[in-house]
Length: 221
Image 1 (tube, rainbow, N blue to C red):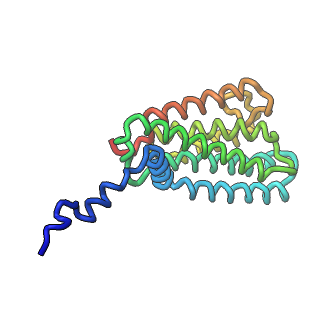
Image 2 (image 1 turned 60 degrees about the vertical axis):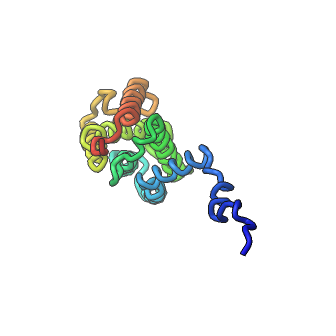
Image 3 (image 1 turned 120 degrees about the horizontal axis):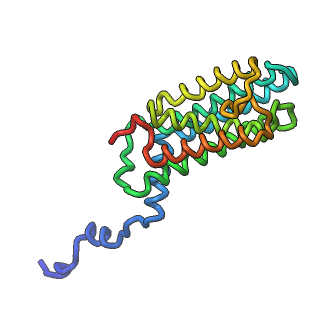
């Protein structure tokens, strides 16, 4: 027996000392990945692609004018907005509250990315096709409906975020038939109507601010 090597640390301890903790950048990326997974962001993107295909198919067969040319595109836009609102809910609550100041940024970033993806998907689906109101009208209508979905999520919960866009869609379809002129029913206004664009922008801004600061109602406190 010899005393050689007694002063050496165990191999496991040596390897543990040689390990370095993950940097803040990797931790931040992991937090973002887990947040997006809990909000089913990938599923949302896949459904948005399906909406784009449905819009493309509908525009190929629908008439170029009349009420029918507005109904189905508006329904698809309301569905896309409702989908964005539903993703504000997590079945696990919001464990990200432990990250402190990062949670509002995660909410804001997710909403903006999904809203941008919705605009891109529907714009691609309507490319080289006749869309009533054009891309500008689609952008205005989708923005306002998304704001309604976010406000509904904050008021009723993410699982019921579809109620607001659906209710506004019903009002809009009636407004198209009755020829209403109020800018608060912006899908019934021409695409270059400044009042309608302002109302849609205000609703979107209010929805983004509320969902960023407070989150959906059914989140864990």
